[in-house]
Length: 437
Image 1 (cartoon, rainbow, N blue to C red):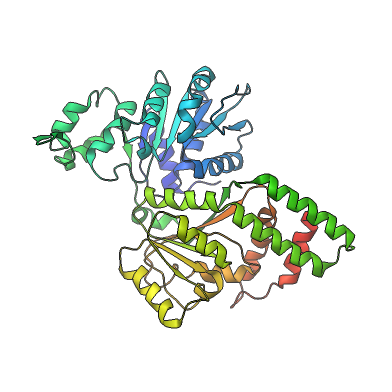
Image 2: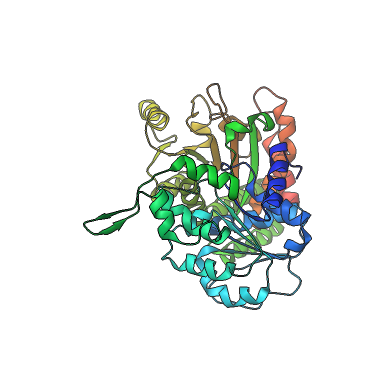
């Protein structure tokens, strides 16, 4: 969890702003770890509440665990219950904030972190009303967002008012100064923008820390990888499958050939049961940034489900397509406003260039680490001017975690080979089977 120099500077500036800031670094630059490090280095700022999109609740839990936090509580559902005493960090999503509000007020937090704070841009929404109530009399508030303004300056005001009510006490004067306020046929219109340079200058002086990827490339490696934990939609179904797996394996005397087939079945089931979580992560990622995204999977069923369920228009590339259709998909993604590419690890993992995107996500894992590294490099190629951010969407408490652990151990070996095939698939399977037993 060593911080890069710009992240160390970010923590320092959070302190200089008195723990009430808009951390507006580009997506992927480590806003989460900067916020957690600030809490670690500021004992009076704990305990803390993190409010975030549902798709990243368990990312926060994972990052906090890696950073050394011991007492973490993740809240789920709309039926609140008492929060255990002694918690350092409570994590919940925006969708359930209003339901947990009475319990959270009793928690007596010293800090609130609003991740993807642009979710609070609508002052008429229930989530904003709940966030506003929760933030009252809280000394430290960190608002994190790589895209604090998604369309117009008016969307800035709700968060600025929570962070710095002294400078931004009321919406109307803000709208007159920065939103080109005018009266139209249907009433007052504040959808415009004026005095943007002055607003930017004031934000930097008063409340905002902002670094873009191009500003900090010297501090970053060419690729950054991370695991994104995903919830299963029906965990009981998966648990039953694991029980059946162990029973069948024992009845067959632990035969490797039988076990290999069954492990493959468990992996497919885990992928199918996390489709909803992956869809949410993809939609929220694309909402939170204006960049493009490449998603890799193994099975046609997963590719088709993601294309059907994700809100963003997309293109795909898999083994069912002709060479002409594949080339058309790549060209459309590279040169149009299509923001989502969904491809098969084998079919789309070699021989094409996808440098229009600098973010990659794996919906499923391949047995051979080199295949995934080849797929990552569709974005990490000549012409890519940014660090490539690779997200492995891993189902929590499933066989995918075991596969991920084994594959990561092999990654350094694979990195030293030309084609990534030095690690035998059967050897990897034997290690995974050992974990499951």
